[in-house]
Image (cartoon, rainbow, N blue to C red; front, side, top):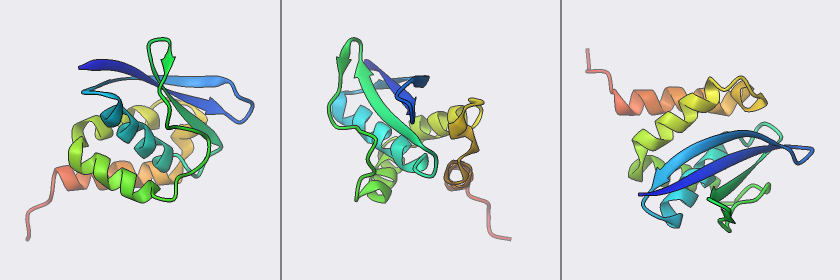
Length: 119
């Protein structure tokens, strides 16, 4: 597993909150970074992905047309990593933690991972 760091950057370009991530490679790490970008899209924050001193190309402050699809693919492939990331974001005390979409997606992730039996 390779080590990565996702940085959440505020509107003035300052790194505000790092999140460490283990992934099989750049593709898997980018998938999680794109999902993070989607889940935080309602707050003014950019996302960058780094592997040590190397910035991994493919993230930016612009939303992606396929953001929802990125979220769904990441959930299907890496649900535990995505749940850890979203819960950490929600508990971070940063601007991102106030994201309505983030709160909704954390609850959706939890319910999808722990479905309630039919009554």
